[in-house]
Image (cartoon, rainbow, N blue to C red; front, side):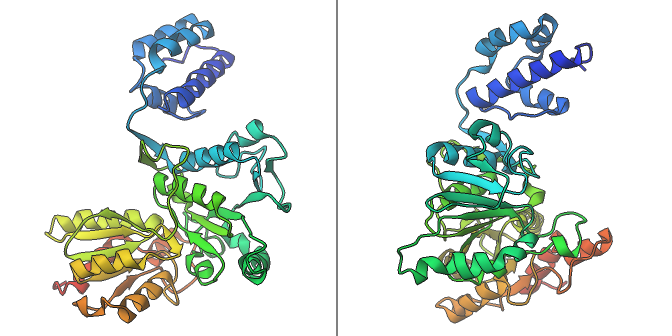
Length: 396
């Protein structure tokens, strides 16, 4: 509404200056070309009357307003989308180590298909952000897959070369490369673009596999992956890119990393343990909120790391709750949940279980394209609540 009378060129200049300065001085909002987002982004930090005054005067008033209104103390917590958390992590790691480079399909001039690499090509140039799959010895490439479904074309190089060279060379040839991109089902992309590769790559010794849910996960795990001497698979979910999460002051540090093999308890509970990763963590939290109204307290564990797997955190939770349900978007056969079930039943906490370990997974078939069938083929909140009650012996 307040921008209606401004000419298009002036609108663009005001938007770029105000939001760009805000992003790098107070970290209040991120670069956006959507005027609605700009209004929402500035409403908590800038008096709207001052903004109207700025726009009526023109672009020359921008530096004055920024000095008076935008420079403040960085808040202890900050809501950041997963996309922006990944972007900032890439930016900081590229800045920290000149050997780090980013390569993949359209990651440079196009800013990445999902805009995760937004602005990096302009900042670091052709030698650091490359629109080709070529990597050179001695460097630390980050390779983006538009979809991990396309990684099947590179499976021989990832598994037979990448995962094994460090071992076969007796530790003389580290393979510090990151493969990242979208994984799992999205929305209406059908069978060939909806597969979850957590179990596929988690099966392979020599690879490290992580699957972030929140912005903290995405930022910390990606930075840890870039610094690791092994090939690391970073499985992101397209549905989470635009979701905002609170980012603590600690997580905003340039030195912040999430260690591999360390799960996070997202919600404490005493009746049953829910273990999941990526998009399904949110589904578990939704189910836990609904079940809490019925007096059922669920402990929700976010795996974050698939390989190595933090079985110890799961075991400690099972000792407390005596019940375990795993939730994942992938297929049931030989999946992440199946591995967790096996390790729990082979390990020292088996006798603490009051019921079998139950799994909630995607249906054992290619994901359908039709929306109603797609929904039936993927875990929903109601599926989780149903299995929780089954595990607890509650009459359905």
